[in-house]
Length: 211
Image: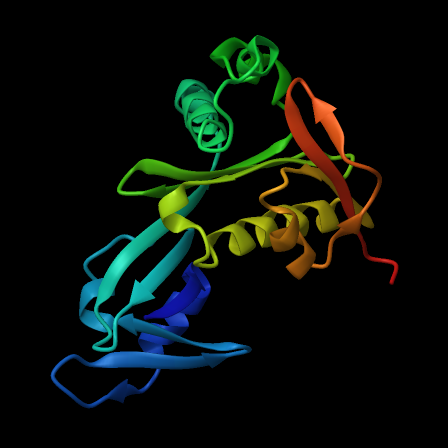
């Protein structure tokens, strides 16, 4: 499988690229670190969302599309349920205080003014990310089916880009023990000792742009 990320501009450029002869014509466009491939015939059947993640097989057929969009108020309940579901994959019981953080009321009260992204496939949430203007990335949750496929990396890239536009030079977050190595691959390093937060083990980490 070839994994590619295309935004609307890149996808349009791909469609304008030279067509490779064959039973399933494709447009090819080189990019740093990977080649982006999209089935011209298939792509033209869709209205282009703002951001696509496209997985294609060796015959250049689109097999999976993940859209990325901003959080809206109507998402509060479904986002809260999704986060709790992911949390329960790693711990048997979630403290009542933590559960309260993901009620629609709490989300609608506390999340305005932050940058929240939702990843969807077929209109089902498969990822959620949130960053605050002070440089803290507070939420990065990916459905287990989509881990280790570059989805989390793409989500982090979007959150960091938003913070950079806010002229933030250092990103901070509290990682679960299961995600520390993932963040290290993105340039994060330890920022203190392990802590226990309402029964959850967290590891403070940071990424500085001053280096």
